[in-house]
Image (cartoon, rainbow, N blue to C red; front, side, top):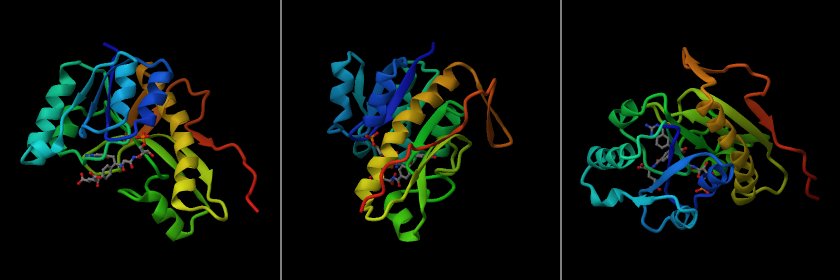
Length: 211
Ligand code: NHR
Ligand code: GAR
């Protein structure tokens, strides 16, 4: 009963980092039939299912079908990894305190979509990624771990996204390992790591500033 169900919508590189870290992924579920990540999961012998949001008349109906697909695996954790559909409060309630997400910004800055464009437009010099527990309020759940990366001269959204993504691949498997080891406790909306010798933050290694 240690299994993880990973929810994806596309490329699935975060899902791959979780699988490659040796974590017990029991199924991958996508809301899009063309998600590239599905093939990788199947190539590793992991059941990969499609629950297409477009086939359902309402968010509630989609979320019910998604929850049913997940519950067949009785997972201990549901990990959103590039999953692009907002989930209803009733879905989130069903998986409360065992639904995680990786978001490509240093929350609470830049919730929602297009975070790298927003960070560049705001002129921030430090950006990053956050692993958090999901709550009904989008991108506002308790923070497990964050990674900071520099915004460098000449960055565009693509370069910045690549730099952030490399850190997502480091912090998400780490957060999941902590969760499965029973080391995460949420109190008052704050996540505490038991027996912490490791930090709940990470600074990306320095890289040369482009000319
Ligand atoms: N659901 C809840 N309740 N709480 C969170 O914190 C959630 C969530 C669902 C997804 C991921 C999130 C992100 O990391 C996430 C966190 C999709 C959208 C979005 O606007 C926003 C944030 C996130 C995921 N989706 C559009 C929608 O109408 C569809 C966009 C598309 O299909 O391309 O659902 O950033
Ligand atoms: C990742 O950067 C993830 O943080 C982000 O999309 C990318 C998915 O990449 N998630 C969101 O923007 C959620 N709204 P991946 O499919 O290769 O893991």
